Image (cartoon, rainbow, N blue to C red; front, side):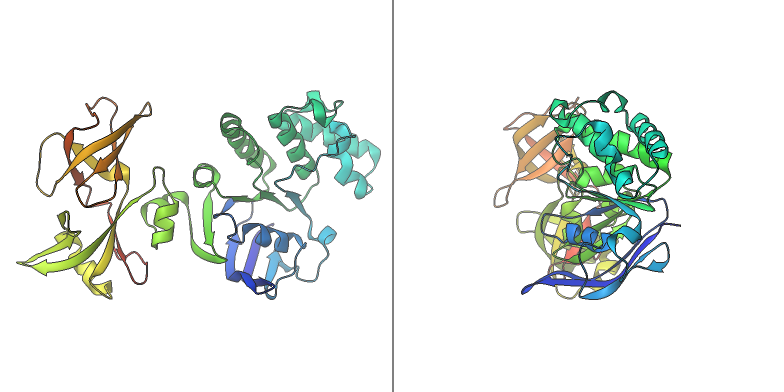
Length: 363
């Protein structure tokens, strides 16, 4: 078993607290993504798990064993950090074999394991070449082979795809998922790219400023964000936000944004039960805004300012007098041109109403 469990991890560097009571668990053989912006504390967490840093408080468990006092070598985890750390004067074979030589593995076994891993990662043609002859993707693959050649209990991967171009990054996502399945190993994968985490992670832990904001599978974070930060970080294009006042009159519940009023009577009970003050934020994803050619009930008039045709969809920047621009998504076959007036209908089953004081999602 190679589950990883962190309990109450806190860490301070100087006067800056980078981790605040972090607790989560990575299941055995799971592809788990630790997602967050730069400076969120992701790499520090990885270094604590590996034994490169000691927490001020809390405990680390690997395979059910508390490893707080275990040295790096005895934790039996492999590490892949953003800097590829390939030795420029060593061939691909020698780079991959290096972790095994440190362990004093017999030469025959080294030959066998390097060959197996090279075939798995598709770098067998690079074993006799030096890193300076590799492309960016080839260097990534050799470095990854070096990270997984040991029979470690878990692999810690810190931004492994950050230094390669977008097209190659898509290809490497598929490769990493394939290798994870083939190895049957626990992967803890750190990234700042929400699309990468959504595409690869079985579960995602979203962290910001040293605190966990939400943990769940990709669909949970997308459809049921627990707070505004999660709602804003997950999704592309990002969610639109409108500051509103929650009002009740004439038997209806309305969100009044000033430049539009939205009837949300179907959500009124849930909002009323959790509301601290009437000041709320309406969150709605661009793909949950229907772009109409004619007005309908509960629709909002807006003008198309910019239309970006992206193949399977058209991303629109919409304008309403008195409001900032916001985004909507239209199907590619719909006629949409800058300057045209359209009517927008929010999917009331998929809106998010956020308490402005607590930043928590109410409905």
